[in-house]
Amino acid sequence: MNIGIDARAARWYRGTGIGTYTYQLIYNINLMDKINRYLLFLPDENVSDLNPGDNIDIKLISEDRKENFWEEIDIPNILTDTGIDVYHVPQNGIGLPKIKSCPFVITLHDVIPYRMPETVGPQYYEIYMREIPTIIPLCDAIITVSEYSKEDIAKALSYPKEKIFVTHLAAEDIYYPRNKKLCKDYIKEKYGIDDKFILYVGGFSPRKNIKGLIQAFSIIKPKLDEKIKLVILGKKGRSYYDYRDLAYSLGLKEDVIFTGYVPVEDLPYFYNASHIFCYPSFYEGFGLPPLEAMACGIPTIASNVTSIPEVLQEDALYINPKDADDIAEKLLMLINDSTLYTELTLKALKRSSMFSWKKTAVETIEVLYKTAKI
Image (cartoon, rainbow, N blue to C red; front, side, top):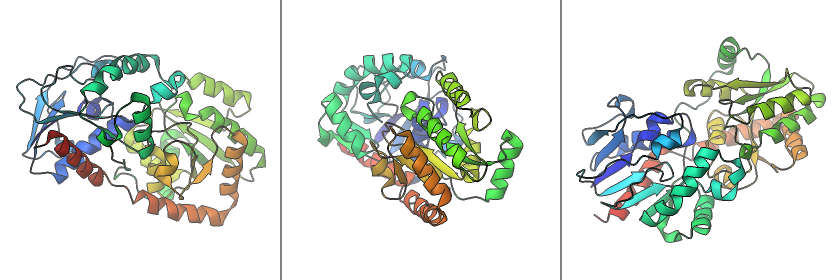
């Protein structure tokens, strides 16, 4: 079977959920499958990090870079004369050709623009809402990342459930328990963070509920017996000043740290150096950061909504994301209860070990094979 994959997100969007998904999917397919042939659409030939085998071919695409990833990915790759039996677009189908030369499969991670449009960036919202109604009728199958997303996609887009396949994601291999002191020393030297801290990783969209986390932190701050800070990782997007101003207004100027962009290679150090990971999101199609934290053995507090309980099961401490008092209560509980802390540390490691990118790759190949009907 000849399989085509739009691999652009692995290059242009690395460090985000979709970029990580695309990279790990291709990397692990290369490890697992030496039978089928693959044609990867990429902007360059430097694919050594993807561990390519002899059954991997590269089709170069013009790198007409734009400021916004979703604008550049919206340009479809040319499939004519490629001889592929099935074509897979991992980034929500954006960039799928409008003319079919073979069966099409997309990975649709979520339908957030339909469910929470006010939390989506204007450029992505415009492209998503314009393209998805034309993409879905062309799809012979949809891969998604949770049972919750499967139900949501079927309802929002009236797409048959029997053609939607769930393949869970996983933490990358770089996330594992490391020497905590060495990680703290690294974070102190590079980022100037010396105190014990609660960590948030996961983007700046209003959907992520950073405001609720800051408000909860302001509630627990006077009740703490030791100095603990709140560290918020990520590129300072359009919502950053709202979050910063909220922290300042609550008297937390020195206690809430916005690091700005952090390279992927530094994320394991942040996770391992942290005391607690908190993920108060209102909506997730899957939500990788909690699994990354858990793979590092960090006790995790997370929202009790959408796909998150499906992924984390009974191995996290759950909060109502709409209730800052509840978030504060659970943070204090975990800070003060050493028995619970140890229990969640062990549960975190066990839960994260149940997910594997190799499993994701194998399940994806199965979907592509069924769809191609070779």
